[in-house]
Length: 493
Image (cartoon, rainbow, N blue to C red; front, side):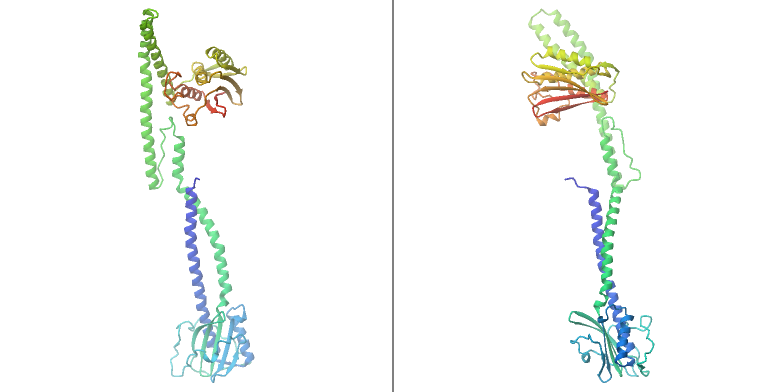
């Protein structure tokens, strides 16, 4: 299965960002919670200090408890408890929900200050309840309230106590006249923390989606040079080896890759031009000596005694020379096609009549085969009269050479919207699957030993396809399950 490198980059960016955002959200949540807990400790301590300087009856203390709940923004009144004792340890007020496991008389009350002591706070957690803007402003005196006479400031401290699944933060304040304890359950901040957590849980997936989209877009921009290389590689043909890719404005790593690719194209172009020039020059240079040799052999054959061993030997040599001449002529055609210089002199051509003549010729050449034709009348095309007949004869020649005993050949045509199809079908002994992809390769022959049982040099189909493509058409090939071979010549209508 093919994997997308761009998708992996986007997912990796989202994963790493997700881990970073998760760590950030978790640490932020802990910091916010710690800040809220510190603020809670400061508030309970300040409330205890403030109320330690007042005296009220039970109803007044009950109202005070409700006022503290409102001031601290506590949603559930059961999360705040209040205990007040006089200087002799007598309980003046205690909230109904005060845990039974917490004995107020055994709380670690701070030692009240005397008038000689400095006003600095002597408490664990110094500065938590410092006076200033964080200290709640005292409410106006109520009817049941009496202000205590002035004296030294109360001693205070903050403690934690866990009881029955509750985490109580208790502010303790003591004077020589009263002891006040204000306790708040840590669960009081749970709704706020849940809201913050919910916001993180909503924001995190949205952030990951945005990061993933951004990573996808960024990776697409980063991989743009690779797409340029891919597009250039697709365009590389025998005629397109001269193209180069500009590296202007690209990153350093891709500049090096583009330069290597351009260097490879340059080497390929140089090598291909040398090979093409050698093939064309060799084929061209061989034509003249082969023509001379062919003429001399023909003269020697006529001069030799009829039926003599010399004449027979010269005839065999002449056949080989003619074969070499055919090879050089086909190589020249192929080199011209590779160079894009195969000239087509298009003229009107009656394809229907040419195919009917070809059917008759095939019947005479292969009387042992059943030859049929299904040729539509009036098929006229614009082709090179010297090249297209070569294609038709090559297809028929292959159908005859690679047929079976008492086989058949069928030539048919079909007219399409923009093409005319000529199909040559024949029975065969079968073509191995490994050889079907090489059927148009140069010098490839179905005769693995290249013996003379099957004539040919393996260039006919290659030349035929190049001629068809030079006309704007093509040749296709298929073999069905009954080993019937079909070559289709497609020509522009």
